[in-house]
Image (cartoon, rainbow, N blue to C red; front, side):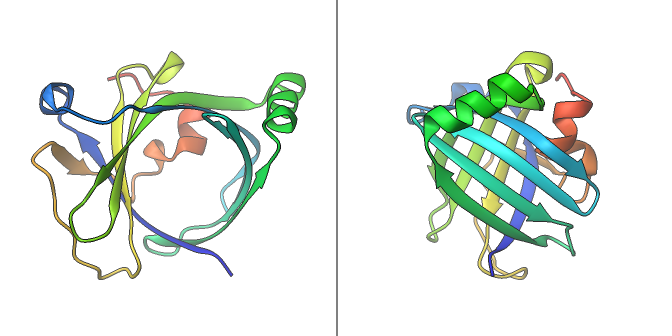
Length: 155
């Protein structure tokens, strides 16, 4: 069973933009099922395709199953079925204690929004908070990628 334990934060744009960071990866994703208790996502991340099924959140945890699929299949599904989706550039920043911050600069309808996520091994795991972090939005459903696909937020 796959479990995702994640915390999510808004990012202080000025501090983030001034930061030296590694090259980002372009993400395009679409949601084929977007219900309160389950999500089915197709994603292209750089040159790889993925299918992901996520369950409802319980606290900051939820079931997640992700499998690599051929990029061509992911492109065809996104193009032919035209689901609601998002595009972003994702940056991976080491946290310092073994975890990684995934920082998303959204494009398209969510252009200007920058969100940072960190996946944890347990709900009570401690982690270093960089100065560019802003307000925590883990429990704010508006910032779930599946909801941003339907109701964009521009920052």
